Length: 112
Length: 114
Image (tube, rainbow over all chains, first blue to last red; front, side, top):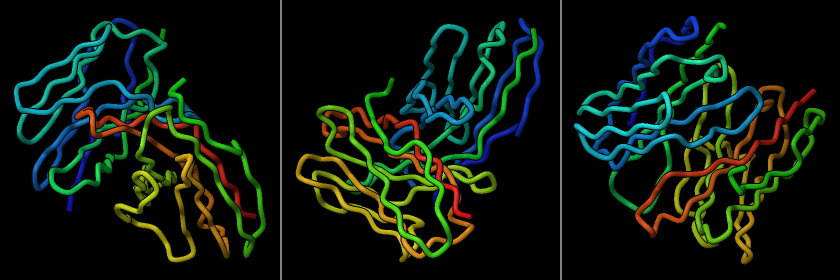
């Protein structure tokens, strides 16, 4: 069974204080690893897809990296508007079901 | 705005009742996925439809059912509701034949069972 574990569960940063979120996964064969951002009471918002170990993607202050066992979401010089829950999900190879298996998320709070 | 529309946004109902949640996918998307999000479980996959056909089931209770119509909108039917069914229900869509398999989520329906 596919599993995703995210750490830490919650992270509090000061504005400008860079840090990283971790996503460890086990999957029979990885088709893709996804990062989403979720604001309270809203649907998850797509950020990145990573397909193979060594791949990196960037968007503004966010950079996602992938190894064979985990992914990191690096946040550089965060701002208060980056406060949200960040969700990691994996998609397994095989078949035509592209369902996502999610971790429980990291709640990020950035204080001004 | 993801382009995925869910109605209603909020629903309050009594135990034992039946409700229907509706989802309109992004224009051009053929796949619809339903997820349940509760505080303790996180986002759990329920069911996947592709172009009107059921493709996979996840942790979906027998009291729950879904369908996808010819116009590609989908409905999730929840019956004999229990207090524990209170959660956020999300619909997501994608068009995986393009090779891009990221799913786009709607804003969810918050179901409260009292």
